[in-house]
Length: 362
Image (cartoon, rainbow, N blue to C red):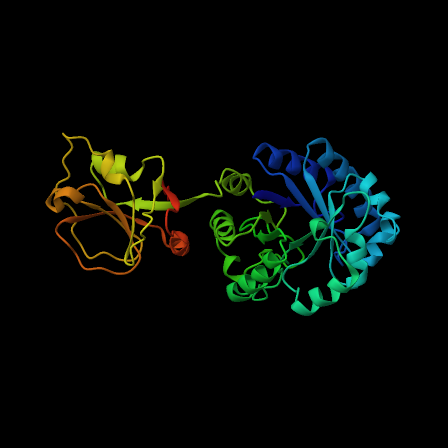
């Protein structure tokens, strides 16, 4: 699993701004750079020169740069579609081929002798495409897939379509990537964000990225350039294997706080239907620790609870409600997962790791 950024040349960002953005992303653990060389609004002459310089920078930082290209872009780059050496010499890791290329041409690209990866459009790919592609003996080891980003409001793909496409792509053994938007610095000329999934358009990138990783993405890229430093860091520091949930607390006691903020929780291997159950939260308790009844209220979806002393041997068990449950005097409601992160609960399955981060609203 990897994280990447998008850099757009020949548009609103200066060469120096893009360079500093790439360097900052590297510091936060990003390893991939996506760029497009067929944006209608771009100044192509300027774009190509800046692209070459950014490709050199990415090479020096050991970051893989993928270029979204069209047949016209080959001309601008001075490259021959039958000889990709020019692209390799620029330091490009791979090319994303979309409109304008036939399955035969794409198959030919995968057999290039320079080790260039070839990306297909994961959002538009079909069984018909693969049936046609197979006729020309592609090297599937050199093929991968990247979803679209969607600048226009309401144009992002659905979760159902996303999963259907990914299932097909994975059946061919392909690695797949997708995009999350920035909520602050959105790319022009539309300025409505660049997500793959429409449900992510107004969702914080940290949450969107976690969902994409839970959905099996091998790489997650920022679509917008340049996100804020806070956004960049929030995704960069994510562990792809641990779901982070931001929480608001209801004044739990110190013992309960220590249970909530233990380094990592693990859902039980026999996952419950109604709640997420932390496997070893009870082990946090010491003999002298006491959890008295407190805030015994109706439990709503996303509420975090800890069993009190009246639940006997279950005292100290932490749970997250997956459905609304009635109050129980033996169960303390100690906090809640913030609304924006509730969508992540459905990805906590058998033995899924999760942790809590106290949400700072101030």
